[in-house]
Image (cartoon, rainbow, N blue to C red; front, side):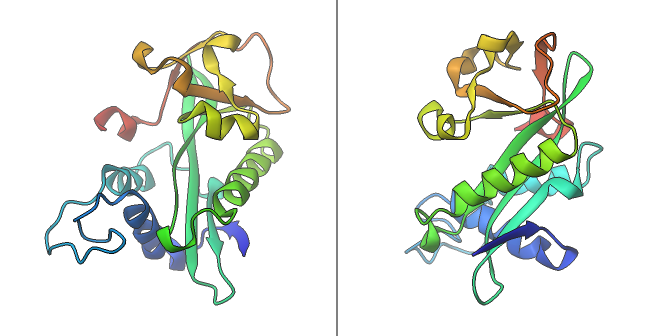
Length: 183
């Protein structure tokens, strides 16, 4: 498996991976289910579509994982967010094709996008996700650093991973790219 920046030729395959990764049983694209025509896309797939057309889209932080046949099997993206007006990044959606999950693809994607974000001089990456899962990447509850989630109910599930350019004076409320407001 190889992780690399997404190219224009990867866009539809990356969207398909996100749709499959988040499909509910019995819907189109879910593993082991024929689904039905016209089944709604998972919100993560429509979010990805909206992110691609917003001001917060950062093509240099959209990565795919490809297998030995150069087929896209995973996708991750970071988009422009802000902490009280200061630029930061929001991670997500991230997804791996169901038939290749639990083989390290997600791990490789997260490491790739974090490394690229660090190389670009970004201060931190925020996400909403499982503390047990994302803790292994160095994410920790954002409130420990004085960064508040967009929704206080998120609690410890709203996490940040600081990067080299992070300054401890960076505090305040995080805001994702605009399409997240409609999820």
